[in-house]
Length: 293
Image 1 (cartoon, rainbow, N blue to C red):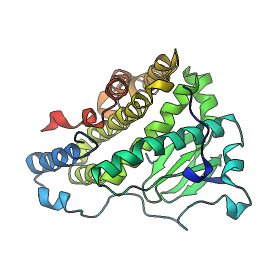
Image 2: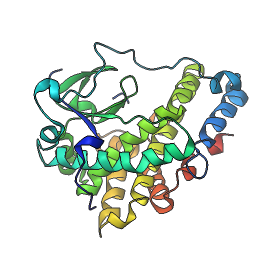
Image 3: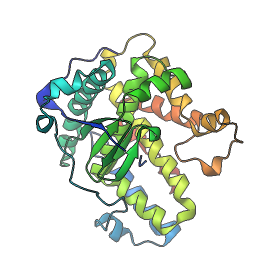
Protein backbone atom coordinates (compact mmCIF):
# COMPACT_ATOMS: atom_id res chain seq x y z
CA UNK A 1 0.00 0.00 0.00
CA UNK A 2 1.51 3.34 -1.06
CA UNK A 3 1.02 5.78 1.80
CA UNK A 4 2.17 9.38 1.75
CA UNK A 5 4.91 10.26 4.16
CA UNK A 6 3.52 11.41 7.50
CA UNK A 7 3.12 15.08 8.24
CA UNK A 8 4.70 15.69 11.72
CA UNK A 9 2.15 18.44 12.37
CA UNK A 10 -0.70 15.99 11.76
CA UNK A 11 0.20 13.26 14.26
CA UNK A 12 0.98 12.85 17.93
CA UNK A 13 3.61 10.29 18.84
CA UNK A 14 5.56 9.35 21.92
CA UNK A 15 8.73 7.34 22.42
CA UNK A 16 8.23 5.76 25.82
CA UNK A 17 11.41 3.71 25.70
CA UNK A 18 11.81 0.53 27.76
CA UNK A 19 10.30 -0.46 31.09
CA UNK A 20 7.81 -2.99 32.51
CA UNK A 21 -3.94 -4.76 26.06
CA UNK A 22 -6.33 -4.01 27.21
CA UNK A 23 -7.67 -5.25 25.12
CA UNK A 24 -23.09 3.67 12.57
CA UNK A 25 -25.38 5.74 9.85
CA UNK A 26 -24.76 6.86 6.28
CA UNK A 27 -22.58 9.81 5.50
CA UNK A 28 -20.60 9.37 8.70
CA UNK A 29 -23.52 9.53 11.15
CA UNK A 30 -22.15 6.78 13.43
CA UNK A 31 -25.66 6.48 14.83
CA UNK A 32 -26.76 2.89 14.28
CA UNK A 33 -24.53 1.10 16.77
CA UNK A 34 -25.56 3.31 19.71
CA UNK A 35 -29.26 2.67 19.21
CA UNK A 36 -28.77 -1.05 18.62
CA UNK A 37 -26.75 -1.47 21.81
CA UNK A 38 -29.31 0.43 23.85
CA UNK A 39 -32.07 -1.84 22.53
CA UNK A 40 -30.00 -4.94 23.26
CA UNK A 41 -29.56 -3.80 26.84
CA UNK A 42 -33.26 -3.10 27.27
CA UNK A 43 -34.50 -6.35 25.73
CA UNK A 44 -31.97 -8.87 27.04
CA UNK A 45 -30.51 -7.37 30.21
CA UNK A 46 -33.26 -5.14 31.57
CA UNK A 47 -31.19 -1.96 31.25
CA UNK A 48 -32.87 1.39 30.80
CA UNK A 49 -31.95 2.59 27.27
CA UNK A 50 -32.10 6.21 28.41
CA UNK A 51 -29.36 5.51 30.92
CA UNK A 52 -27.06 4.07 28.26
CA UNK A 53 -27.74 6.81 25.73
CA UNK A 54 -27.41 9.46 28.42
CA UNK A 55 -23.79 8.71 29.19
CA UNK A 56 -23.42 6.70 32.42
CA UNK A 57 -20.03 5.83 33.89
CA UNK A 58 -17.43 4.03 31.85
CA UNK A 59 -16.08 0.60 32.73
CA UNK A 60 -12.36 0.64 32.06
CA UNK A 61 -9.00 0.44 33.77
CA UNK A 62 -8.36 3.38 36.08
CA UNK A 63 -5.61 5.76 34.95
CA UNK A 64 -2.24 5.07 36.54
CA UNK A 65 0.29 7.87 36.86
CA UNK A 66 0.40 10.96 34.65
CA UNK A 67 -1.67 11.09 31.50
CA UNK A 68 0.61 10.31 28.53
CA UNK A 69 0.64 12.90 25.79
CA UNK A 70 2.97 14.13 23.12
CA UNK A 71 6.23 13.27 24.86
CA UNK A 72 8.78 13.62 22.07
CA UNK A 73 10.04 17.10 23.00
CA UNK A 74 10.22 16.15 26.68
CA UNK A 75 12.73 13.48 25.73
CA UNK A 76 14.57 15.69 23.29
CA UNK A 77 13.04 14.01 20.25
CA UNK A 78 10.88 15.51 17.56
CA UNK A 79 7.98 13.64 15.99
CA UNK A 80 10.14 13.06 12.93
CA UNK A 81 12.94 11.55 15.02
CA UNK A 82 10.53 9.25 16.85
CA UNK A 83 8.94 8.11 13.59
CA UNK A 84 12.29 7.45 11.96
CA UNK A 85 13.51 5.14 14.72
CA UNK A 86 13.13 2.16 12.37
CA UNK A 87 11.20 1.14 9.28
CA UNK A 88 8.29 -0.24 11.28
CA UNK A 89 7.96 3.01 13.22
CA UNK A 90 8.00 4.97 9.97
CA UNK A 91 5.27 2.78 8.50
CA UNK A 92 3.20 3.15 11.67
CA UNK A 93 3.51 6.95 11.57
CA UNK A 94 2.55 6.99 7.90
CA UNK A 95 -0.48 4.85 8.72
CA UNK A 96 -1.46 7.07 11.67
CA UNK A 97 -1.27 10.18 9.52
CA UNK A 98 -3.43 8.56 6.83
CA UNK A 99 -5.94 7.30 9.40
CA UNK A 100 -6.29 10.78 10.88
CA UNK A 101 -6.80 12.27 7.43
CA UNK A 102 -9.42 9.65 6.60
CA UNK A 103 -11.47 9.61 9.80
CA UNK A 104 -11.42 13.21 10.98
CA UNK A 105 -13.60 14.46 8.07
CA UNK A 106 -16.08 11.66 8.76
CA UNK A 107 -16.50 12.90 12.31
CA UNK A 108 -16.82 16.50 11.14
CA UNK A 109 -19.57 15.47 8.72
CA UNK A 110 -21.36 13.72 11.57
CA UNK A 111 -20.97 16.67 13.93
CA UNK A 112 -19.09 14.53 16.47
CA UNK A 113 -16.06 15.95 18.32
CA UNK A 114 -12.85 14.35 17.14
CA UNK A 115 -9.53 13.98 18.93
CA UNK A 116 -6.50 12.30 17.43
CA UNK A 117 -5.05 9.36 19.35
CA UNK A 118 -1.46 9.34 20.58
CA UNK A 119 0.80 6.65 19.10
CA UNK A 120 3.11 5.42 21.87
CA UNK A 121 6.18 3.42 20.87
CA UNK A 122 7.82 1.37 23.61
CA UNK A 123 10.19 -1.56 24.08
CA UNK A 124 9.56 -4.53 26.33
CA UNK A 125 7.14 -2.89 28.73
CA UNK A 126 5.58 0.40 29.69
CA UNK A 127 2.87 2.03 31.77
CA UNK A 128 -0.22 3.31 30.04
CA UNK A 129 -3.27 5.12 31.31
CA UNK A 130 -4.74 1.62 31.72
CA UNK A 131 -1.87 0.31 33.85
CA UNK A 132 1.27 -1.72 33.22
CA UNK A 133 1.72 -3.42 29.86
CA UNK A 134 4.28 -5.65 28.20
CA UNK A 135 5.07 -6.37 24.58
CA UNK A 136 3.75 -9.92 25.10
CA UNK A 137 0.25 -8.41 25.02
CA UNK A 138 0.73 -7.17 21.48
CA UNK A 139 -0.49 -3.78 20.24
CA UNK A 140 -3.39 -2.33 22.23
CA UNK A 141 -5.55 0.75 22.63
CA UNK A 142 -6.08 2.41 26.02
CA UNK A 143 -9.25 4.53 26.23
CA UNK A 144 -8.12 6.22 29.47
CA UNK A 145 -5.42 8.18 27.63
CA UNK A 146 -6.63 7.64 24.05
CA UNK A 147 -3.31 6.00 23.23
CA UNK A 148 -2.30 3.32 20.77
CA UNK A 149 0.61 1.35 22.24
CA UNK A 150 3.02 -0.50 20.00
CA UNK A 151 6.27 -2.39 20.44
CA UNK A 152 7.42 -2.64 16.83
CA UNK A 153 9.10 -6.01 17.47
CA UNK A 154 5.55 -7.39 17.33
CA UNK A 155 5.71 -7.04 13.56
CA UNK A 156 8.71 -9.38 13.43
CA UNK A 157 6.77 -11.91 15.49
CA UNK A 158 3.72 -11.49 13.31
CA UNK A 159 5.78 -12.25 10.22
CA UNK A 160 7.97 -15.03 11.59
CA UNK A 161 5.54 -16.86 13.87
CA UNK A 162 2.16 -16.14 12.28
CA UNK A 163 3.14 -15.90 8.63
CA UNK A 164 1.49 -12.47 8.28
CA UNK A 165 3.87 -10.68 5.94
CA UNK A 166 3.83 -7.43 4.01
CA UNK A 167 3.30 -3.76 4.81
CA UNK A 168 -0.48 -3.96 4.43
CA UNK A 169 -0.61 -6.60 7.17
CA UNK A 170 1.12 -4.12 9.47
CA UNK A 171 -1.15 -1.26 8.38
CA UNK A 172 -4.14 -3.47 9.17
CA UNK A 173 -2.94 -3.86 12.76
CA UNK A 174 -2.60 -0.09 13.13
CA UNK A 175 -6.00 0.51 11.53
CA UNK A 176 -7.62 -2.06 13.83
CA UNK A 177 -6.31 -0.31 16.95
CA UNK A 178 -7.46 3.00 15.50
CA UNK A 179 -10.87 1.38 15.11
CA UNK A 180 -10.98 1.03 18.89
CA UNK A 181 -10.29 4.76 19.15
CA UNK A 182 -13.31 5.39 16.95
CA UNK A 183 -15.42 3.17 19.20
CA UNK A 184 -14.22 5.15 22.20
CA UNK A 185 -15.05 8.51 20.62
CA UNK A 186 -18.58 7.54 19.57
CA UNK A 187 -19.37 5.74 22.83
CA UNK A 188 -19.73 2.20 21.50
CA UNK A 189 -16.92 0.83 23.69
CA UNK A 190 -18.44 2.34 26.81
CA UNK A 191 -21.84 0.85 26.06
CA UNK A 192 -20.38 -2.58 25.44
CA UNK A 193 -18.54 -2.49 28.76
CA UNK A 194 -21.78 -1.54 30.50
CA UNK A 195 -23.50 -4.52 28.91
CA UNK A 196 -20.61 -6.79 29.91
CA UNK A 197 -20.83 -5.58 33.48
CA UNK A 198 -24.58 -6.15 33.52
CA UNK A 199 -24.31 -9.65 32.07
CA UNK A 200 -20.85 -11.24 32.53
CA UNK A 201 -22.02 -14.38 30.74
CA UNK A 202 -22.27 -12.38 27.52
CA UNK A 203 -18.93 -10.62 28.00
CA UNK A 204 -16.94 -12.71 25.53
CA UNK A 205 -19.57 -12.53 22.80
CA UNK A 206 -19.79 -8.76 23.14
CA UNK A 207 -16.00 -8.49 23.09
CA UNK A 208 -15.91 -10.48 19.85
CA UNK A 209 -18.44 -8.16 18.23
CA UNK A 210 -16.46 -5.11 19.33
CA UNK A 211 -13.25 -6.54 17.87
CA UNK A 212 -14.95 -7.48 14.61
CA UNK A 213 -16.26 -3.95 14.28
CA UNK A 214 -12.70 -2.65 14.70
CA UNK A 215 -11.67 -5.02 11.90
CA UNK A 216 -14.43 -3.61 9.73
CA UNK A 217 -13.36 -0.04 10.49
CA UNK A 218 -9.83 -1.01 9.45
CA UNK A 219 -11.26 -2.16 6.16
CA UNK A 220 -13.22 1.08 5.76
CA UNK A 221 -9.98 3.04 6.03
CA UNK A 222 -8.38 0.86 3.34
CA UNK A 223 -11.46 1.08 1.16
CA UNK A 224 -11.41 4.86 1.33
CA UNK A 225 -7.79 4.82 0.19
CA UNK A 226 -8.34 2.28 -2.55
CA UNK A 227 -6.19 4.20 -5.03
CA UNK A 228 -3.18 3.46 -2.82
CA UNK A 229 -3.72 -0.31 -2.67
CA UNK A 230 -1.16 -2.34 -4.59
CA UNK A 231 -1.40 -5.89 -5.97
CA UNK A 232 -1.15 -8.37 -3.12
CA UNK A 233 -2.26 -5.95 -0.39
CA UNK A 234 -5.70 -7.49 -0.10
CA UNK A 235 -4.22 -10.95 0.32
CA UNK A 236 -1.77 -9.66 2.96
CA UNK A 237 -4.64 -8.20 4.97
CA UNK A 238 -6.72 -11.37 4.76
CA UNK A 239 -3.74 -13.48 5.82
CA UNK A 240 -3.08 -11.24 8.82
CA UNK A 241 -6.73 -11.24 9.91
CA UNK A 242 -6.88 -15.01 9.59
CA UNK A 243 -3.61 -15.52 11.46
CA UNK A 244 -4.88 -13.76 14.57
CA UNK A 245 -8.29 -15.43 14.69
CA UNK A 246 -9.03 -17.04 18.06
CA UNK A 247 -9.54 -20.50 16.56
CA UNK A 248 -6.25 -20.36 14.66
CA UNK A 249 -4.32 -19.19 17.72
CA UNK A 250 -5.88 -21.91 19.87
CA UNK A 251 -4.89 -24.59 17.37
CA UNK A 252 -1.34 -23.24 17.18
CA UNK A 253 -1.14 -23.40 20.97
CA UNK A 254 -2.15 -27.08 20.86
CA UNK A 255 -5.55 -26.35 22.39
CA UNK A 256 -8.99 -27.51 21.38
CA UNK A 257 -11.00 -24.82 19.62
CA UNK A 258 -13.40 -23.32 22.16
CA UNK A 259 -15.78 -20.77 20.58
CA UNK A 260 -17.25 -19.82 23.97
CA UNK A 261 -13.81 -18.55 25.01
CA UNK A 262 -13.28 -16.39 21.91
CA UNK A 263 -12.64 -12.71 22.58
CA UNK A 264 -11.63 -11.43 19.12
CA UNK A 265 -13.46 -13.72 16.70
CA UNK A 266 -12.63 -16.65 14.48
CA UNK A 267 -10.37 -16.36 11.45
CA UNK A 268 -13.43 -16.55 9.19
CA UNK A 269 -15.20 -13.79 11.09
CA UNK A 270 -12.20 -11.48 11.13
CA UNK A 271 -11.47 -11.83 7.43
CA UNK A 272 -15.15 -11.42 6.57
CA UNK A 273 -15.60 -8.17 8.46
CA UNK A 274 -12.31 -6.74 7.22
CA UNK A 275 -13.53 -7.53 3.71
CA UNK A 276 -16.90 -5.85 4.34
CA UNK A 277 -15.18 -2.63 5.30
CA UNK A 278 -12.66 -2.77 2.48
CA UNK A 279 -15.22 -3.47 -0.23
CA UNK A 280 -17.77 -0.89 0.91
CA UNK A 281 -15.63 1.87 2.44
CA UNK A 282 -18.73 2.59 4.51
CA UNK A 283 -18.76 2.57 8.32
CA UNK A 284 -22.54 2.06 8.21
CA UNK A 285 -21.88 -1.52 7.11
CA UNK A 286 -19.85 -2.25 10.27
CA UNK A 287 -22.78 -2.90 12.58
CA UNK A 288 -21.59 -6.18 14.05
CA UNK A 289 -24.32 -5.98 16.72
CA UNK A 290 -27.30 -5.88 14.34
CA UNK A 291 -28.39 -9.51 14.73
CA UNK A 292 -28.66 -9.15 18.51
CA UNK A 293 -31.79 -7.00 18.19
